[in-house]
Length: 139
Image (cartoon, rainbow, N blue to C red; front, side, top):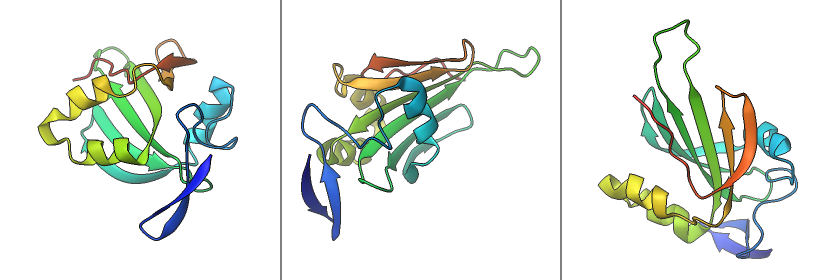
């Protein structure tokens, strides 16, 4: 990793092959899911009850992540299916998301399709590694 100044704060920027630190992006998917709770929420790009897109960052290394939350209402018992997807992003990618406007969904779909991402499904109670940004169904 190398250092780069961003808005007066020294941040750890990733190479094309590594992202984050051992704290925010550990090798095990379950560990990365637990680490998500400690990430700062920097910007809420979409804040709807069943669809949220946020830019987050590690308080330690300042790695940025885009997180996508989706939920569908099944009207049965209140255990509505929820999905999360988290992808580490470069500074340039996070800036592109900030300026995407109505093209945000398309930009998310095309963002780093080969990069490892973290997914979690409440329906299967599974946390797993995937690639790119998965946007689940939502109301």
